[in-house]
Amino acid sequence: DGATVILATSSTVQRVADTLLARQGLTVFTNSIAIAGKLAGHNKNRIYLLGGEVQAINGATLGRDATTMLSHYFADFAFVGAGAISPNGWVMDFTREEGELHGLMLQSARTAVVVADHSKFSRFAPVRVGNLEKVTHLVTDRPPDPTMTAALAAMELELLVADGTSQPERD
Image (cartoon, rainbow, N blue to C red; front, side):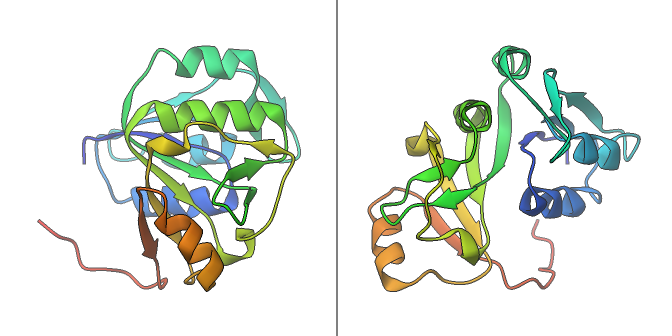
């Protein structure tokens, strides 16, 4: 409650947004039209939709307007999806605009989290996302294979495997 959160656009990050519906007084920066609509008007949240060109295929705002707006903010948490995670642990995306914005999102938070389902591991996409050294956690739905696990172990991040069940709240 009361945290400042950056949320990127992806189906996996939308699941994160679903869990945030129960939280109160959030300040959220997002480039996702769906996430902004989902969280706006709930529990005294303040929602900022990043500017930019609307990409109809994914309901995201991208481009210089989005990165310029985000460059003025800093958050407690950032949640970014991955188009792919290469065998050496690079987070990758499909467009330069997504890659730039996601890299800035990771840089702009105290706790930077990449969320990716198991199908993203050991794959490639055309654009490498920057600021991987800022990633503190990688959350996924299944443990990666041993090669991928070794690549991730070389990075200073915590690998969390979510089992899809609700966890009791901690004080």
